[in-house]
Amino acid sequence: MRKITKEMVEAFYSFKPKSKSNTQVRVIRGKAIMYLFDNKIADLYKSSKGDILTIYDSGWYTVTTADRINGLLRVGELDYYQYQKNWEWFWGNWKDKEWKLPFKTMSFNLTTKRIVPRYHPT
Image: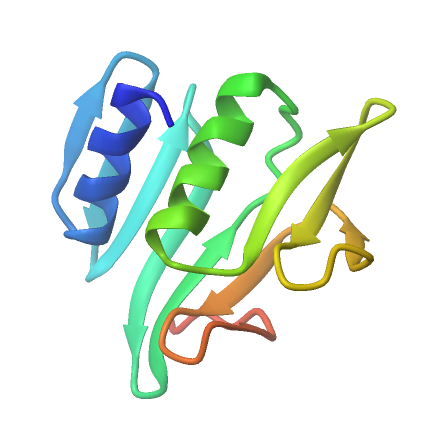
């Protein structure tokens, strides 16, 4: 994990606004949002069922995007990761090497460590 990724992920999970180089963490109405080159790649909010992390498919499949996403997943202690094969992005699972899904927006409950349906409070 790059130094900038580590710093920005720490700010994100601490709900602290921060901006460095091409990455920003904003906190809006109790929700932490991470942007890479002004594209939203993740948000985090507290719910009664646990903290919900959503990773977005912003359409920019770069090494930097992958580093930020995998940094968020690692620090969140999730069993999932993003990887690329034959120019396509996928979700992988450390516990089940056969498990893979095409990369798309996905939400995770950080308390249960499970994938959850996308839901955002208004």
